[in-house]
Length: 146
Image 1: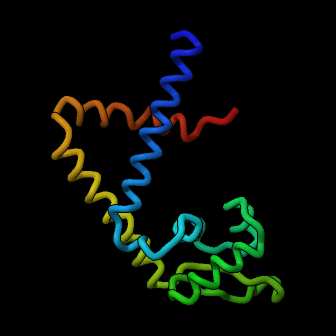
Image 2: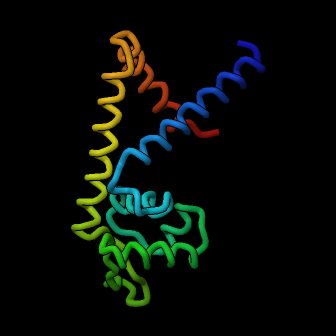
Image 3: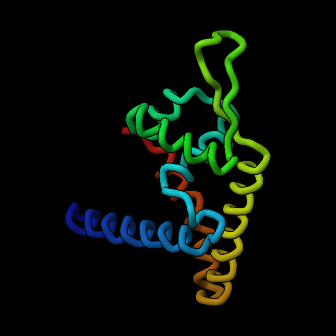
C-alpha cells in the first residue's frame, strides 16, 4: 500500500471509529447528563480504584481547576466520594461511590446491548465474522507506542 492510500485508509478508519464512539455515547441514557470528561473520569476511577485530583487532571490532560469542577459535579450527583489520605492528611483520595459504580456499569451495559443489537440487525453473518477478526488488530493499535 503506498503512503497516500495508507493515509486515506487511516483517515477513513479514524472517521468511522469516531462516529461509532459518538453513536455509542448517544445510545446510553445513563451517560446523557455527563460530559465526556466526566464519563472518562468515572472510567479512570473504575480502572484505578482511587486517585488524587491531580492525578486525574494529568490523566485527562486538563487543569487542576477544571478537574475540580468535574469532581464537584460528580460529587453533587453522588457518583464519587472524597476521603482524606491516611498517609498524608493534606491529600484527598477520590473513589467511585456505590452509585457511581452502578452508573458506570449500567452505562457500559447499555452501550454493549445497543452495539450487539446493531451488529446483529445491520450486519450480515460475514460482516459479523469480520468484526470478530478485527478486534485483535484494533487492540494492537490501542497498545501501539511510537
